[in-house]
Length: 123
Image 1 (cartoon, one colour):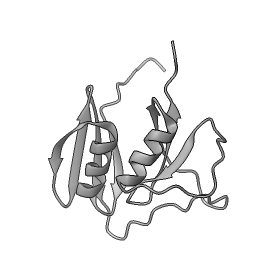
Image 2 (cartoon, one colour):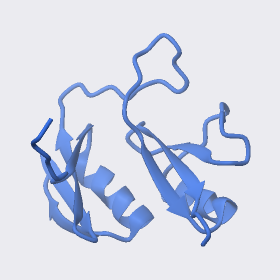
Image 3 (cartoon, one colour):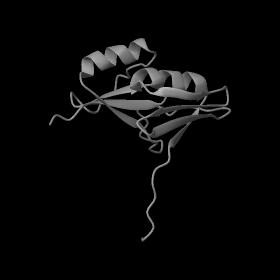
Image 4 (cartoon, one colour):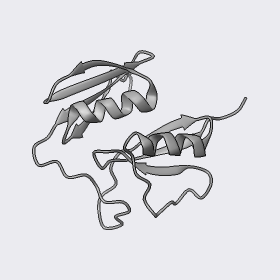
């Protein structure tokens, strides 16, 4: 392939775009650049995440070995325990199934989408 592309942004399906953006605004510290019932967006460091309303949106089950693999976000944090506590206070939940042991933590955002928090690489 000779053509290359640049990632413009990531758009995520959502049942509540404004709330979804507000959660990740708090989690990442990114600016909310647009917020309406149908669509919301956050931006940080030249990267944007959009959240689009999908009527009847159903989040994936976690874990769901019979379901197809969907995307998830991995977020670097300095302290797993402190970040887990803050994200849960912001509306995330921690499922029982944790495949990463102490290497990462799976959380579920307020819309029902899994995401992982991972220790920031040192050095």
